[in-house]
Amino acid sequence: MADHYYTNQPGAAHDEQQFTFKLRGNEFRFITDAGVFSRDRIDFGSVLLIENMEIDSHARVLDVGCGYGPMGLTAAKLADHGRVTMIDVNERAVNLARRNAEANGIKNVEVRVSDVYSGVQGEQFDVILTNPPIRAGKEIVHRIFVEGYDLLVEGGEMWVVIQKKQGAPSALKKLQEVYREVIEVDREKGYHIFRAIK
Image (tube, rainbow, N blue to C red):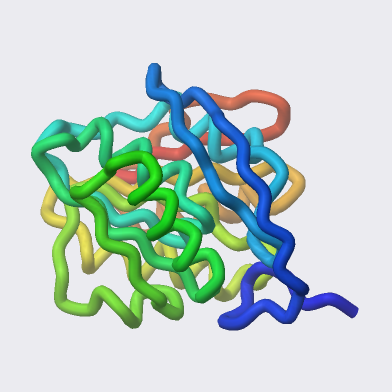
């Protein structure tokens, strides 16, 4: 059985490809590869989150499970006076995200290998973005929600996209247990966008 994208070093043979995609008015060029999430095109959930997320121009943003970078790199364009940190457990994805930042001339980003939040302990962010790795299991997804709380400044926000059939109701319940306020910002084709405010 092939290992999935939520692994430190995917075993799939490299098979790089490129495509362009317009996000929030910016044309991006993405290099992708086998062994990373949604490599042929940006998945609908990520696009929906990108179209809805509100990022201040000075924001410090953390993209959890960044993959090859569409959410974090779009956030970096929006936070043009801020800083975006992108993390993923998948070393291949991290390498691609770095290359994609360079290919698109985006300088205000840093991409790190990190198992959940291991690579950003003690740091503070205004916004956390995540299209959580459902295949990694509910325990990991809920850790992203719970442990992210301590990394947010007071009034900071976690933006989450999750499909109904992949656990949106339990995700909402968990977010409501942890955060002061949780708003459903959008819902389309079974995907929900939640904005959880600390």
